[in-house]
Every structure is written in structure tokens, then in C-alpha cells.
Length: 115
Length: 111
Image 1 (cartoon, rainbow over the protein chains, first blue to last red):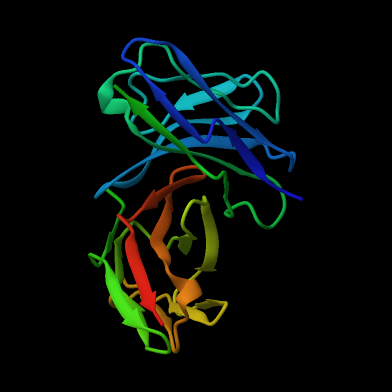
Image 2 (image 1 turned 30 degrees about the vertical axis):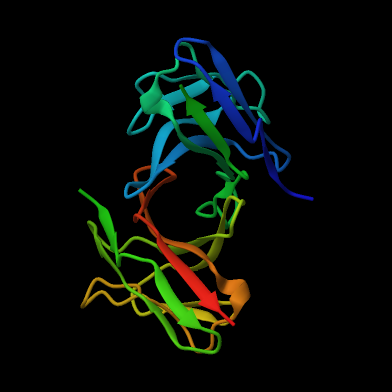
């Protein structure tokens, strides 16, 4: 089954404790990205990657890092989380080839609470 | 810059009622337009899309027509079901592969 998986689905942590949210897709997609969803703001892009070792900032990158060492994985790293990063996070992927390049596939979300 | 404006929710309807969720956009040119749906506890799924002006996207009984005159892409369904309860997002692409989302509209359908 084609899917994007994220782990963990729920996480409660404390300010300053480094954490990583993993994202993996099995569709051989080149493009992957991270969004955060906040009430009244919709989804905003944090970082994106067009392929292995190619990453760039989205609209709200401050406080986040990413890496793309393998095509299927795109982890989101919070080196020193703060309460304003409490949010619902989504990973998404899409193909850069073929006819459906404008269709993005989303993971189930990770609800992060930073105390 | 490019943006999407959706009606505030929640929208509360009884089963079999007619649904309209308004979406208007501001964009340069005529980008593709999308509706995504987020069911409780799940990620977003593409519901439908339209790639050019006057196109109508449709899926699962939902429809939306790309109207460049009014810069709108309203979502409609003739008869909603309880299973349609979800959050609906209007979106358009900005730049390379990035989506700009509206704030989402929650639909609650009661039996």
C-alpha cells in the first residue's frame, strides 16, 4: 500500500530536549516536505526536499532542521524545542515525474506538545 | 502574495442536507486549485482538483468549479452523510511543489 508514515504519532516533551520526528514514504517520491498545522493558520510549510541531499527552507523554518540522506526518509529535528513549537506536524511527499506531480500525499500527523 | 480564504466553521448540517464551503483565492495567473479533506485522526487526502479555469473537479459526490471571474472554488455536495464529517482545506500551489492552504473548515454532520 502506498503510504507516508510518521513516528511517533503523539509526543509530549519538555523545553530544550532534542527530538526527532521520522517520516518515510514507499512511493519512490523525489519531493518531501514538512508542514505544521495550527488553529486559525491552516498548514504552513517548514522545510522541503527535492531529492537526496537537497533541502531548503519553507515559510516557517526557525527552530527546525531536516536531513535527506535516503530518498524514502525525511526526518524533522527539533534541537531545542520550545512551547511555541507545540503543533500538529505533517509530512508529505510527491513525485516530480509523470502526470500527477501536483498531487501530494500526507502522513497521519504527529501531535507534539512541548511543556 | 498568493493566498486562499475559506469560510469560517464549523458548518453544522443534518444528514442529506446540501453543503457549500466557500473558497476564494488570490494568485498570479491561473494555478491549479485543490480541495483536501482531513478525517478525524488522519492526514490530509486529496479530495478533488481543477487544473484550469472553468474546470470542474469531482469525487465522492463532491464538486467544485474553478471560476476565474470570481476567483472562487467553492466545494459543494448535494446530500451529505455523517461520514463526511471532517475538516476541508482549499489549497493552491505556490512556487515549486509547495501548497498554500486555507485555514480549513470543519464540517459536522448529524444523523
